[in-house]
Length: 510
Image 1 (spheres, rainbow, N blue to C red):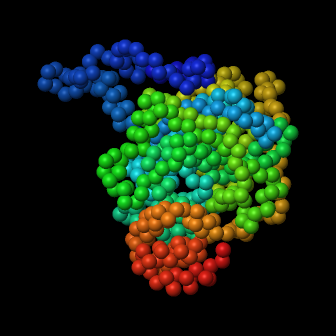
Image 2 (cartoon, rainbow, N blue to C red; image 1 turned 60 degrees about the horizontal axis):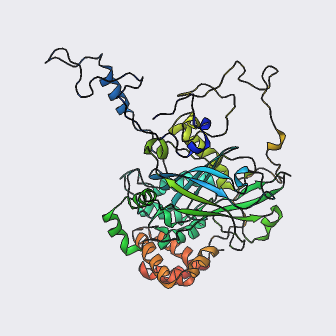
Image 3 (cartoon, rainbow, N blue to C red; image 1 turned 30 degrees about the horizontal axis):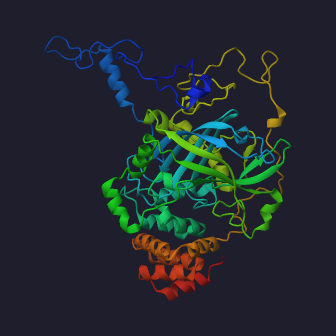
């Protein structure tokens, strides 16, 4: 049942928000204008043996709509699975933020979209790939999108490299097939990716279920309280179900049994009333504490390993969407969608995502994508935007500009962005404290003997496809620099000269 433009989601009673409009009833088949269809099996023809006539509006409309069923596939995160639920805040953090979503006891409807990154729609879900974990909070102050993945870090630290990262890991522009030579050619020139690659090739890098993985906002964000005080924060979804992955030797069998494993697992659990939960925790730093580390604390390839976490609420997923396309496909997430009390940090990767994500949704779905039911805020939207393709908003009146003495829109200074101190000049330089390898080694040493073995098995399998000797030894030197045992075992598994690997690693600065 379609939601009328005069009855958008934001006007529904709170009890109906999560359910949307799922009431079902017997109805006659109609055309898009609502008129009933008399025959949906036979086209109008000019006589019993004549050609089909153009006036058959049901035939024409049906074919027109069918021809246009596909919107552009997401460039990344195309293979997705969505579910509805709610977030319940349980800890008072008003000393950190004025965001109402964190008011203790507040229940906020959410839509979560899980995904793989590089695969196309319909590709196997058992891919050696990060998993997207994007959450849309329909808060009283507008929508907040926490767009993350299942690891606390990322491959690159500057958004200017993101198109290159994706191109190198997507199928070849010549063959249409993913090529380890291209991927590791990029990574050989991107030492900052060493830690993320180490995480990715572990057993946890191949979750056996979306329910059995954590989620992370990855970047540092700013929390701002009612006094205008700023703290830097990282968000972490911790799976109450625990974390489980698939070992390398079991992946082919898993794909053979069901390459829709993760979607089927999630939806089966939801339909059986086995509602998965994640606790939301935060790590918090004061602005003057950012400089205490020997790495850049806003570098998204780094973990705040010494900063404690505190639980602030719980997410529960409880409903399978009624329509895959209108929810999972048309849902649009962008890190720039924030609410008062949450602001972006100066993280270079995040800064690029603030523009890119919203921009790609405008291209993919259209200028007015935020008016689609799945993206529409529950909070009343009052702005001067107008027109554009598929605009079905409810703006009224002559005054579509500001300032105005006729119909001035109120503005509240308390919602201004906080002021951020700046220093120096504009520049194009890498960050100074890179520390590309140490955390990869720390993570490797934290693994069990079996997990270390599985990591070497999985990673060496892809490295053995690298035909460029230069790139192969460069990659091995990165892993050796992170940890000698790690690099030595990979060298053995890839039939490389470990002394050459060690010599190359010795020339690297940490």
